[in-house]
Length: 291
Image (tube, rainbow, N blue to C red; front, side):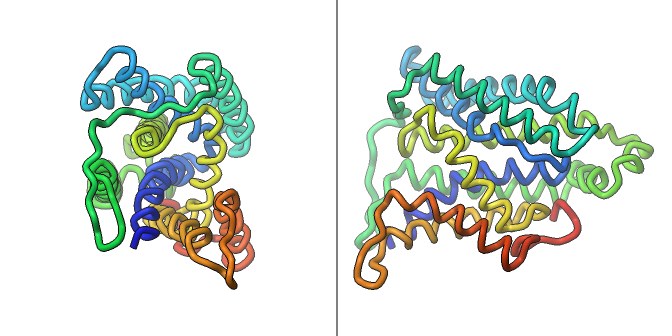
């Protein structure tokens, strides 16, 4: 039960980040390699506001989200917008450059020591032999509600229909009055907001360090590839599945011995390799990018 609860916690964080990746790829057809650093922007800004300005967390979160919106918008205008219409792989290079720039700035501003967002006194809940804090339960429930609302917007609203029309045929959508350029910006910024929320999630539950940006990006990409680059729902499901596999890999004995915890992060890479060998389009992959 403890491993299952740990997987829910880790999977919720990964699902937020991976859903942002799925949105950007599904509509723009590009990969954003700086999403882990954008998560750090949200998490570290929330920590800074609570630590140095004694701002309550319920006020620090929307303020850090506003900063995430601004940084993501600037990132899109400078590192993505001039390139993605020319070739889909150009933003792969430019967002790698963006990740390196943000890494340097974060190290300069926040140093290397770990940061934890103070969410108040922890109230522990016992589920059988397992232990879960009230903060962790709140984060899991809010993440599931947020992802459910995001899926509903994409599948059951006029805005979602505009997105699917843009994915299927951008020029035809523009001829019907859909402003594809504005839509691309909104979705890219939405992915940054999801990443910022994921960063706050990590800051409350664990520690934030400037060096985790690349590692959490790879974990999100594992969920994206396993679920199918064209399936938001599949990406979310596989984020939780990979988190469960990570917990099982180090939490139970295999042939009489435990795998060292340092190998936990390799599970995501192994999942990518296996899925690409068995089913390259992903478990839930299809020809339509947003499903």
